[in-house]
Structures are given as C-alpha cells and as structure tokens.
Figure 1 (cartoon, chains in turn yellow, cyan):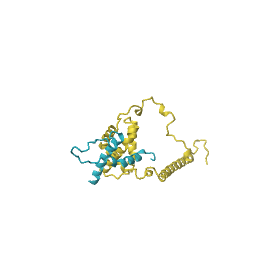
Figure 2: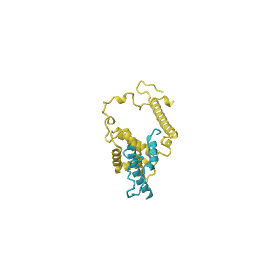
Figure 3: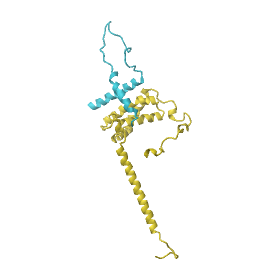
Figure 4: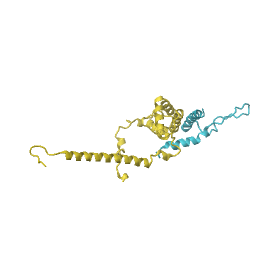
Length: 165
Length: 69
C-alpha cells in the first residue's frame, strides 16, 4: 500500500531545465580542477574550529563517516568547487581527515565501512516512528472530536422563544 | 545508503595504499651503479588517483602517530 502513495518531494520531470543554462554553479567550469587543489580546499575548510566542533557532534550521534564525506563532497560539486570526478577521488581523503579529527577529539565514530547495511535506517526504527506519528494523530483527532461534542452539547437555545425542557 | 560510493572508493584506495610506498634504496656509488629513475615505476605520480593516495597516506601516518602516541 505504501508504494501506491505518490512521492511529493521528487523533482518534476523537466524541472532541471527551468533555470537558464549555466545559471547553476555546477553548470559552470569548476573552481578547482585538480585533486591537489580540491584537497587543499577541503583541508583548509576542515581545519577550522567551527567545522571540527560540528563534525564531532555529528560523529557522536552515530552518523557514519562515509555518509558525511559523501554529503560534503556533493555540496562541493553543487557549489561549483570541483567536478564530480574530482569529488570521487577526493572523498577517501575527506574521510581520512574526518577520522583524524575524530581520533584527535577522542570520539567513538562509525566509519560506515564495516557493515554498509548498518548505514540504513532499520525497519524497526521506521515502524516505531510511524506508530508514534499515528498515535499522535489519533490523539489529536480524538481530542478534536471530544471538543466538538462538548461544543455541541453546550449549545442550548437561548432567548424568549426558546423551548423550555 | 547502499549507493554511497565512499565505501567502495575508500576500500579500493586503502587496498592499494601499501603498493605505492616506495622502496627505500640505498644510494649506490660507482661506475656500475644503476642510474634508472622512474622508468620502471608501477604508478605514475601525476595520475590523480595516485595524488589522492599520496595525500591519504600522509594523513593515515598522522592518524597512526596519534593513535600510538
């Protein structure tokens, strides 16, 4: 039944053609064309205090390094910093730097390399969230019904012409 | 994510990391010493993947130093 439901957050066919050609950052030539330049860019960015703190908190949450590295390099592609090819080559280096930051901060992190399936959100967790949402919805509906009933029962005819019970 | 390329890429580079480590050769002197440079190297250092591996090796060494104290 779930598969029958439409995906509302998916892009509409042809949506990518709505912007002017070359208007998006990834449609123009990348800023860093070589692996060395891209690595320099990432290492400079990742060596800041702000980034380290954010990364530590993300790793502490149990989010795998592979996922974070992929997201970071994808953001680089979208910003027009480098091409997809360079991003792919740079990704293991980004992972290594992230693990170095994690080790330096003494954070127990999940590399995401041991068990790729671990990276997925388990069905049990999804079912639990779904149940919680359903319960909340049911509660909300029941309270609304009770309120409506109360309002209906409270409404008594008033005025001179009202019938007296 | 199943389609996260990071896992495959990392494992691929990690597996080949040992092979790019250059053998330390003792400098030999004399007329009969070999004067070969990089003609018989397995990897071309100008290749992007080798550049990435080199960077990774440096960071890996730092990590290991940190772990070992």
